[in-house]
Length: 157
Image (cartoon, rainbow, N blue to C red; front, side, top):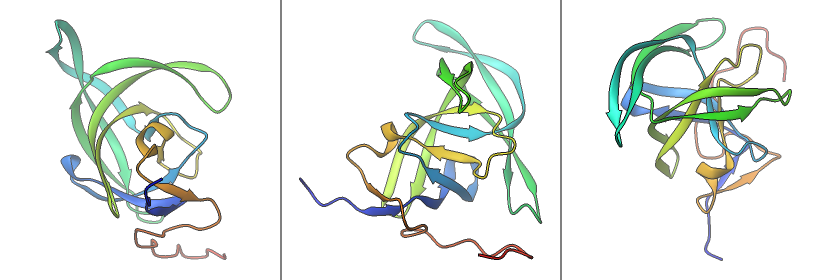
């Protein structure tokens, strides 16, 4: 087995095609696919992909801290729709977009499902498909390949 880089169970990722330099993400070995929390998801057009007409969507991504929230508006073509079971085992049909993820030595283009993760601690999940044969997750440590975000005011760890 080749040596794989060791990542923490949480890291900061960049989504450079969308102009996002830092977004906290959970490396979730229990999730198969990547998921991203978005707001105000809407269709703004359509495009052709392999003979199929699919929507182009616009959505907001919360960036910054909870104390200093900002929303980055992004447009992306949907590459497919996928039925995903959420943490409560409810089936949900989600649009899937494709973009580049950077995190430490990880640099890949992958599919990401768009959904509401309202109330969850992490705005993004990196699932097994994106991690497979690329990295190892240390479940006891965080931020091993990316900078630790600044502590929030009033946060006691």
